[in-house]
Image 1 (cartoon, rainbow, N blue to C red):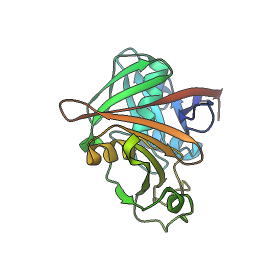
Image 2 (image 1 turned 90 degrees about the vertical axis):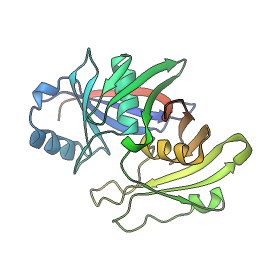
Image 3 (image 1 turned 60 degrees about the horizontal axis):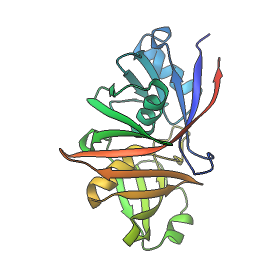
Length: 218
């Protein structure tokens, strides 16, 4: 039986909410890409991470239906768990750091999978959106307080894989930060919080709170 752990990434100030993340610490127990895809589908989280070299931060990321070169909340979760200065993903080297209650990653916007960033006039409009039909990955957002950089957002993956809405999505937050060119505090889903900041050399930092749920065997 393959052991895995469950983290919640981008929790709110009270430690609640956040996006569930499955992590297999011993990636060798699920060796092939086909086996990893099947395992990620079985777990059913929006993403699952397989750790291939914990001392070097080598990770491999899957949704229930596809392998991702980079994704935000899996990298933040893995950075929190491994406590290494960098992660090695298929997309490139992701810098990491911790700052009090927040764990941060730094990555380039072009590493993030494509997302449709759809702005609405008010946060109330975002709150009342219905889940769209599958087909387009939509990050719906509106200013809650533009002067303070506060945003209300919801994320609809549109993949037809059982994940109709992501509670917290670091890659989409990264893309939005690159588009707006300023630090953001994003309230997403039911109560998750994501913080971001542009950095030199086209990097974007994405940070949040992480807590451990449990260790399980499927």
